[in-house]
Amino acid sequence: MIDDIFHATFHFEDPSGASSCSAYYQQTADNTSSNYDTFKLAEALETQLAAPIVGMLSDDFWFTGVTVRKNYDEPQNAYLSSANPQVGLRTGPGLPSNNAIVLTLNQDTFPVKSNGRMFFPGIPEADTEVGTLTVAYYNGGVIPLATALLLPVDATLDTGSWQLGVISQKRLNLVPPAKDWPGAFAFCTGIAPSPIIGIQRRRRTRVIGAIG
View 1 (cartoon, helix red, strand yellow):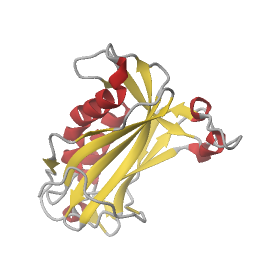
View 2 (cartoon, one colour):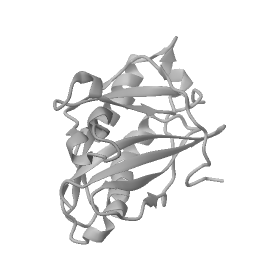
View 3 (tube, helix red, strand yellow):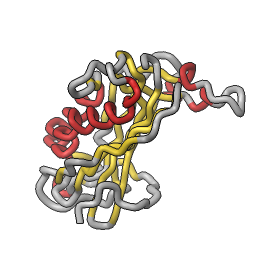
View 4 (cartoon, one colour):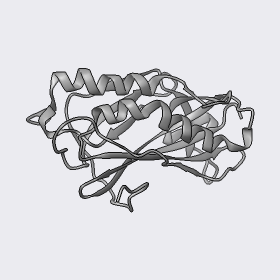
């Protein structure tokens, strides 16, 4: 339903295991089959974002699917869309997955400290220069990904639509133990990719949508 809030996790497989990144979305238009919003959003994200994601991935990384969970309002089962794993299109080995593209998700509702961040793994080693991304890779791989993420996500063969956003953890947990999901959500108004490679401490988990 409109104003429902979802959490999407993007899954990757690489030579040393699995990695992921995640983002929040709020529904802005209802599906005709509204009982399947987690399925519809996971399917739509995989369809709309696969091309820009694999366009920036090293060819020893795979984009293996998207898991969507509903945080608010009426509960639904989580759904994993992993029907079409795709290998990265950039030639050569990638950096370890804790070396990430950092995207800052800007919003206008809360103080700047509440801006979000996404950490995408799969940076090709050949597209780096001493801790930074090359200009060609930044312009040709990272900017298209940021542009695609900011667009509305429209359901495949349905009427649902969702928009990327940010959750203010301070507002979310203002009156514990209650969670103020609608009050904590802010739509993303712009995405600022960093040319500097981010180092993130990642917790290894089982591979989702494994290739082999």
